[in-house]
Length: 506
Image (cartoon, rainbow, N blue to C red; front, side, top):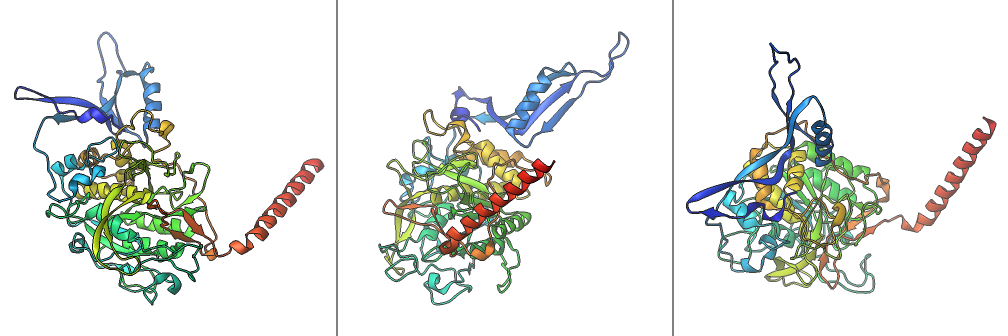
């Protein structure tokens, strides 16, 4: 994590000032050991050693041990040096760019303009948006690749069929008679279109908004319908997006290096979902996941797929850099990014249709669903400047590059991740990093398994406040949950009695 003012722009006359920032390059130490042999007539050569650590905690522990060692002459953090100068910055000509505080320099912004001075992205980078699909929008259409519809349940699909090669969003409205109707109808959200726009809306085109990545391509994979989406559909979408073979579907010709999951629900990480994430990661994809909108502590509450292993979990921050009131939190959260709340929302693409698609529009929404794509966009920019980096490296660099939360942000003790995602710094770190297939990112997880046969479903869920990020988890076997709980209690009691008997006999 770096302090906010580490890129202060200073100039004295025509001189360029070179300053040391507080960010270390991938948790490295520079160690100089004392000579092994030292006499009045001979002294062995002393060498510098560079050592890399998987986490800041490990590095700090080693630093404390080495600085007091009689065998060490010196030890220091391997800090980065950057030029600090005033320069002309890249600006977007998009007509509503001024409303995109999330890309700006506020305490809660990702500071995208500085990032665009370095790179505006690569057209060879593919970002998959696994969501409700996408609706036609002139500020997005040119960025779309052929996708797929993984929704297998006809009652959820709203398009009259099951899995096919059409990832367009027919609308996810809910009305009386639907299985998930809970006494109130709901208009279509066009959620996937909003998410895709944050990542890579057509930029610098004198229209609408700018995406985090100006050049990346979007791979739309529809896995959520009107009542959400089944875990199996979402997991199959993850695999297909990464280029992994999925039975009954054609091979994806444009594998994604970044996969965005702005969805989730209560419960442990299913074995099926974890396997899909593992396979996607083995293909080189970074899986970015929304932390969820339950205002829950994920260290004590199961929320999936945020509790799966090997994912980059993103919490929500407001325009002033505070924790959004709705955002889940805890050590499981890796980093925060703009998601709105406290009077702020995120502008992106939408549609005026209340049920089926109508006219394109621009709308404000809030939630961790908006936070995740900001980070997915940053990762895609990093991938563009250094395509060889592995998923664990990219995830670690995003966390390392994050800027500090403001004082009194509600994010004390690492409960909102390492900081607020900072685009330009993440790119700078990615530029100088060497690909390392053996590096493993450290993470906090509450990973577990869930019986796949229960067919749980996940939803992006929305309410009158426009919060997205999935807070609903449906389990088709919930009618039998009481019996299951009783069985577990009886089983636990029998095991305890058995162990007690063994102890008495012994």
